[in-house]
Figure 1 (cartoon, one colour):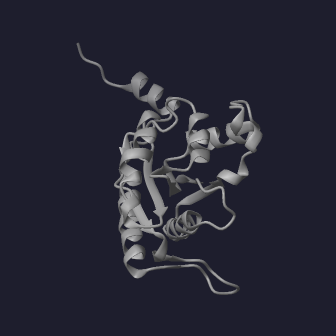
Figure 2: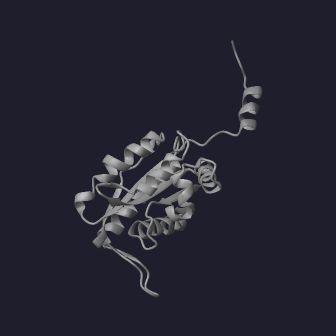
Figure 3: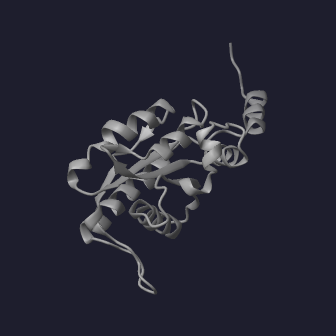
Length: 197
C-alpha cells in the first residue's frame, strides 16, 4: 500500500511536519510505503501562477493517483489552514482524492483553533471528492517538542495516543478499500463465466 504525506507549513521548522514525521514512521513500521511532500518542495512561482503543468505538481498528482491514502497536515493561521497548502490543493484535479482514505491533521497555538480541521480543511478535501475522510487530529503547539541535536522530536503522551488511534483507524480504512480488479482477470472471468438465460 502507498500513502502520500503532504505538509502545509512553509516554515523549515514546523510542528505539523513533526506530526507527519511521527505518522510516517508509525505507518512504515506497519508495512505501509509513505511518499512525503512539503509545501517547500514546490516552486513558489508555480504556485502563485497556478501552473498546472509544473513537473512538481504533476509528480504529486501522479503519486496521489496511485496512492491508497493521503495524510495532510497544516498549521492553523487566522482560524484556517495554510494558504500555501490551499494553493497546492487548488492545482490538483477535481477528483484527485476519489477512492482515497484521507487523514487530516492540524497544529495550532491553542485548542481554540481545533475546529479549523472540520470547518476549513475538510470541506476543501471533500471538494476533491475524498470519500473516506477520517476524524481529524488537532495538536496544540505545546504538545509537540522539536528535536534538538541528537534528541528526537517528542509528542505529548496524550497526543501520541490520539495520533496512534487515528492511524489505527486509517490503517483499517486502507485495508477495507476495494481493490481494483486487473482488466485481464475481469476479462477472463467474463469469458469463462457460466451464463444461463
